[in-house]
Image (tube, rainbow, N blue to C red; front, side, top):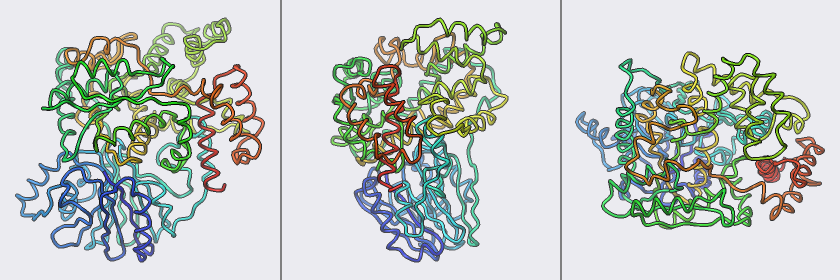
Length: 618
């Protein structure tokens, strides 16, 4: 894993500026760094040595030194590509994956170049013959890649801080980012909190030609039900799922450094660990994290059971409320406000894990591809009820008024009923939002439909597919892309830990998205194919236990241990009060502290926004 950065055009005339960019990425690649200078471009890379620890340090070029490359991530099919290139007469001087990019770029056009790669990656290729820059990002967006351009100049980097480190790039707040952030805790791709700085979309390449023209081109879209063959039986689907997952795990176990796994004790991470144990000659190192005295957020018991079952070398860690002192560091690593509080345990888990291994596998993507979230069954149930009960909206309003004003199940039912008369994509948005549209608009001082329109655009892209498939695709392009993947990338790379996600393997994803919906979900039963696939691999209680999110007990923390912290940071003098309605902030805090509402996630989002604004001086 590494960090990449560079500049093209007038901005490239100062290589020390690109060195400055790389210094902001030392945490991503502490082992070495290097620059490649071409005619009108300077690109660079910091390196974390994972594969080919001896000969793969940057800069890496083709035989003639006319194509320079920088890579963040791993190309899992690099051995096959190296073999093909050698047979075609290319002379390769390293044993790693970065060099294949330089040789492929000699006679492969940008879209096809990215299409030939299987892995998690963000890359930069400067072709000095054509004076052309190619930036590419993997299919689902596991690795980040940002850029800024004003026409004559283009600056890019693995993180926003690396783009901002170049003196050509202005530092301006994008006020359009506030509305979606308050709703979801993130700014949807390709936007950021900084005006003019964008992210390369997943499954795309950016090409800047010799004349300064910039194109962003798609090379991959999720393939849904493309084989046209006979529908598989449940048994055949489970067998194929296990085969593909096993292959995905094995290709991600290739490393020249110590390797382990995150283990929560849930279905997904347990499946990965079980397959790792089956493929390994020695005990797999596993790592988990929990919360003392808060069983609702503590999965250590389940993780221990899986560790015993699989014979792993297991380590666990406990998060305490004082860990919130790390909040400013989390904001620094994200470069912008980030509302998902599970970044905190992810940061601490990564720190613990990095003390023993350099690479860790995880279970991310299992819920996204195999329909593991309650909101998927809720949306399917809502649509069934609408078809059979035309009077559902009026009935829902009547029932909602009779429910007690509590939490837990009652709260879930109220939220479900509140979505009875809105389009299903808006219902999904409501169920995943950090706060209601009403509270968001009150904080902003007026209505804003930014979040809605973004969901609508993604929803429209999947028209014609079954409802469950559309829900999965929407989730892949929103929550997975802009919440889960940035969280794991930033928090793991803060400690130079490379995290690999077998469930996000391209072949496995294509298989899962092509499954008939009834094999994925039936009634309230979710992940049916995956559970059937791993029945013989994991303890029975893992398959039947209720799902828990990887969260933090924010509601309790902000009512007790961290009450003063929140009131002090968001009170009088807070910079956030220059951007949001002060009285609305006070209402959110007051309602939470008095127990009238649970705003823990929203308060966390406001705190990360406040710390970001203070850091930037806005």
